[in-house]
Length: 238
Image 1 (cartoon, one colour):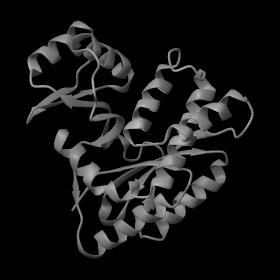
Image 2 (image 1 turned 60 degrees about the vertical axis):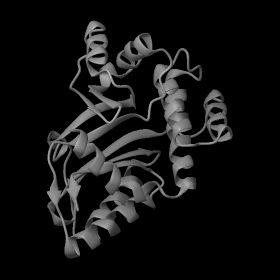
Image 3 (image 1 turned 45 degrees about the vertical axis):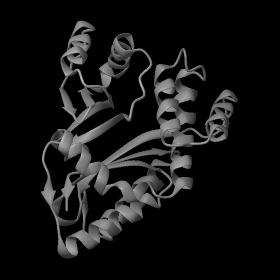
Image 4 (image 1 turned 90 degrees about the horizontal axis):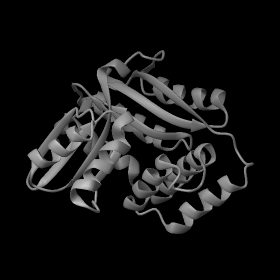
């Protein structure tokens, strides 16, 4: 699982190059999360985790504060999550997660990204069965047994624990994300997570090359240009 995660992170790195895009996407997600569960991070664990991830991504404090202030107002946009699945260039499997205030517009925009790169958008569930939806926590530590014992004692459903070069990576179901973080905090005190995310991880990979690779990079670039797109997951390997 770990190698697949690293492959996806490398292959998607270029979609996070533009800081303005990153700030915008975090701002929208923070707004939605705060509006749904409240603006107090102590009472909204999802918001607290999101703020921590935003800071890790070097999102400025004023961007975070603006999103929370906007949510306090109670008005503003009414964003809803939307997920699209399909097959990208070379037959690779793709999941596109969005936040949208206009589902028809977003669907048409995402569909254009597929059709203009000889890809095919599918129905819900078309490829998600080939991915694991997983919370990922990575941090510096060297006692894998102690970490695993703490997680199991806290009744965390551990999917996998990897230890490599002084770093431990924990994979759990998203439902156990906060429970896992609390168990690690109880064991280690304040933890500086190098990775703190909930992602779709491919169970396998699809090798692409040549013209398919060129189209795939165009496909990712087109999706990255869409404001409504929050995350793109795939199983392409190249």
